[in-house]
Amino acid sequence: MQASRARLFKEYKEVQREKVADPDIQLVCDDTNIFKWTALIKGPSETPYEGGVFQLAFAVPEQYPLQPPQVRFLTKIFHPNVHFKTGEICLDILKTAWSPAWTLQSVCRAIIALMAHPEADSPLNCDSGNLLRSGDLRGYQSMARMYTKLAAMPKKG
Amino acid sequence: MSSESTMNASAPALPKDFGKKKKGNRLAKLKQCKLDAKREQWLSQGKSKVKNGTLPSPVINQNHEKEETSSKNSETRSRGGEDSSLHDSDLEFLTYSPTNSSVSGSKDSRKNLHIGGSSSSSSCGSCSVSVSDDEDVRGEDDDDDGCLDDWEAIADALTAEDLKVQNPSLELPSGSADDLGKECGVGALKPDCSEKISQKVVTNCRAWRSDDVFRPQSLPNLTKQYSFPMNSERHFGRGGTNQGCHGISSQPSSCPICYEDLDLTDTSFIPCLCGFHLCLFCHKRILEADGRCPGCRKQYDSGNGENGIGGGAQKFRLARSCSMTGA
Image (cartoon, rainbow over all chains, first blue to last red; front, side):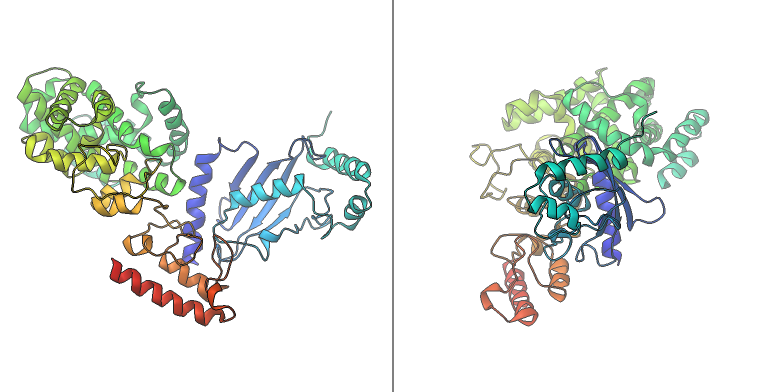
């Protein structure tokens, strides 16, 4: 318990220092609870998510870093590996392939990579996965882009 | 902070100034965040002067020390406190800045504590004492030059590195060597030279190349030249020169899992063939959990096959005993 707190505190320090280094990720710790974090990530370029800013919610277990943090999208996203309603993320490093050497920052990077490279064979969003698996790349991209505009971009007017 | 209270008790001469700075001192922790970013800019700008007000605590401490010093040396007092404090805060930044740019956050936080905490008063104090005493001996008027001359003398005596010597950042060790700074600055140069220079090696890890002729024999030979000057303040804080150099030869100096420092036992502890370093505590915790190496995600006892946690624990004990005897 104490170890996870100490580690999170040091990660917090590191995030403060690296803020400039990684402009695509903004990782913020909850003011009152160091086990709750929020991240804002920019959709990677040349994907349907480009231009959108997606919010992630981190719930860090007390066994962290031996246990992975629980991450979900707060912003609605149309992606094969993200549950459309709950925002749950299907990503191996958040489950079986977790390593204590990962940090919250590196998890954010992994999620950005997942956005750029969806894995249609283990879908949480079946509609999105089916579009990709049936080869309808255009359909997937236009759906994803639409939801990016609807949910992840600032409202105009 | 404790340094604040002692300062106010012993040096009531400038209450207004102190009150202002004390207020700033409370915000110092917040400002550290800004400072971290700013320091990197400073680093890129080279040796440009640091503004006086940006780091309140060292300046205050320095003034406080100045008061004490003035009881010994009245001449010191005649010099403007403002420019000398500027010099010292400058020096403080130079002291820590080389380690700042390339190391990871754990060291950075430690360094911040070091600057902001009460220990900074000792380092600042020692440096101001040494500077002022040198001034008295030499009868010169410029802080920077005096200090630099001092160091050039040392450097000439040792015919040490040329680049670092000409550089103003050579002031580094006198500020960073908490305990040594005082005696070195005050006393004779020659006997302390080796000690001081070895301190410098720890502080600025690029003082000697491994093939350098003038490299002291006492330094351990590193199998691999480390590419960045990391974690120096921690090692001089601990005072173990050999240990420090040994620890940074090829691996991180802090455990990548818990971010705590690796001690000598930990650094010689490589539980997995992939070479992933971690501290014994974290290794034990991992063995109690899923027992996979964080570096390669293989079971720690992959050689034994299906033995699971028991085999891993056995190997863990074995490895530890080996490393203990090695240490």
